Length: 74
Image (cartoon, rainbow, N blue to C red; front, top):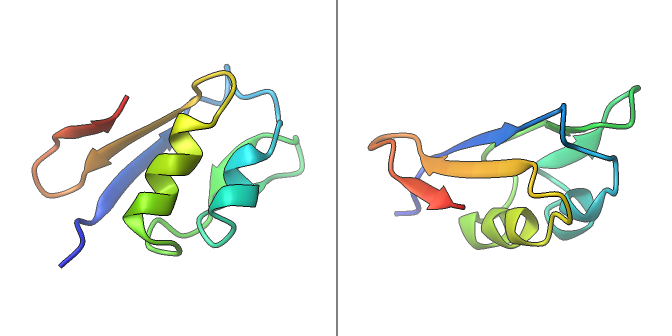
């Protein structure tokens, strides 16, 4: 069973590049301020969410295991 994720976007760092939404479109989207937001933490497979976080050019996304709190990215 895949871990449930706690996904955080640091909106003060996000520059609206939208790489996260391209990689994990069912999890991330841009809001009216052109900042990334989490629309559904279970929208995409954990592997895609981690790939999206790793590809954020400004490192605005952090991911943790919701049950244990263990940091998965960064």
